[in-house]
Image (cartoon, one colour):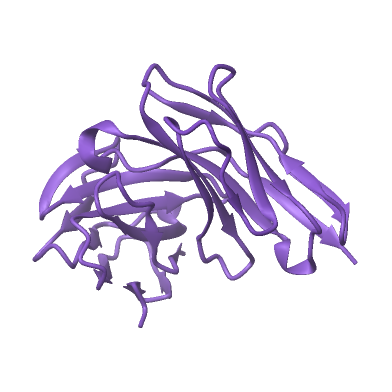
Length: 117
Length: 112
């Protein structure tokens, strides 16, 4: 079974700063996907970024980028130039490639990120 | 157009009642899921359906029964509701493992 660990229950930074959220995972699979989802107070689950394990290049989406270290089983999220609207719960998640997605996502416990004005 | 829609958004009911949550997706995805988010915000998969067939059923009480009339719909029926069932329930869909999960906006269930 896969496990996902987010060791930072809560983080707080000033607006415009850069912040990094940590995530580690454990799996015996070689092919898989990793995701970061954002859940603002509206409780909507919003996909932030996705990484395929077979790709060495780190994924980026505008101000969001990841540092994917496959050997270390680490998948951190960096948010640059943080904005007030980034305040949310952030969940790291894992999906196996095999099984056609039937196992769905395994989530970490989340990091509550607060952006201070 | 809402991609994954679930109703109702809020559901308040008494212990012992039976209730249903509906979910529909218009993305043409083959796989649909139900997740439960507890009071500590932890998300855990309950069920997974692929083309109307149950694929995964985590350790969920049999008071919870998913029903998939077609691959665009996955409803959740809950019998004999208990206080511990209070949570936010999310429906989601994906096109196998090649696409990320798309989530509905959640249903907050409160059992009194």
